[in-house]
Image (cartoon, helix red, strand yellow):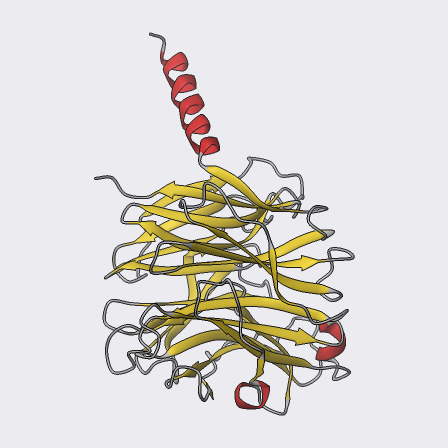
Length: 372
């Protein structure tokens, strides 16, 4: 059999297999929203998946009549439920879903879901100019997302008075499961301080946390790099936190990383990881098991394209395995893929919930990263 035919056949089979594993979860222009953005996903103890997104009712802009909506799946993402609205802030913004399951609260043996989110009364530019505000809220669910508590405003606990713009991680938050800080809920954030700078150096990435299952919250440390923005985090095998942020300045098209041995209160080994190229976009980090971590982002230094899942076997020091989730060789400037969030489906499969086709769809795709 000719080599070119074998190559064509393998490519065809791989493409067919991948296509069979993907499902459109949210689609612009459907179910009451002009656009859906900013996916987040978690898995419950039962195996059920919860996928969150912003339903942007009137248009695609970050600010406006934007609600947070939810769909669930009980078959590893093959099919999804009808959409429900979890947060409706009237005609104002509800954004940046940051869900996490508290599995260590003895009051809730089946787990308690926290959904952290932001609200705002002006555009991000206006808030950076000191003309508006951004707040931080959460809701909880103890019945796998079927019903939700009243919203709780924690802005005064997690945002300093001189901070202007503010955003939770776009994607899942984490709970530490080992070590001195076991049980800590940690949410990466970014804020702006002072007058807006043209190079976005008024931004800084940091975090907040709770050690008492949401009764009180505290501000974590800054990572110390001006321009650090949308961030994600994962626990490592020894209970440390690996932090991974977007470089809003764009002067270096790589991800910013940092590590903490004290639950996020201080950071070390802060710098740019040249193994993780980035076009100034969001990314998602996940602990798989032990020293195995996964990371997803648009692995392109020019366009939002080539969404790639990477696997590390050494707590994120190196990333020796990579899998192209979706991308094209020449995007011609359009955003082929964009924001994403990842979840562990089983010991060899990661689910990727991501934006594609110039934000027209949010798609779920199962990626096999390990073999038996």
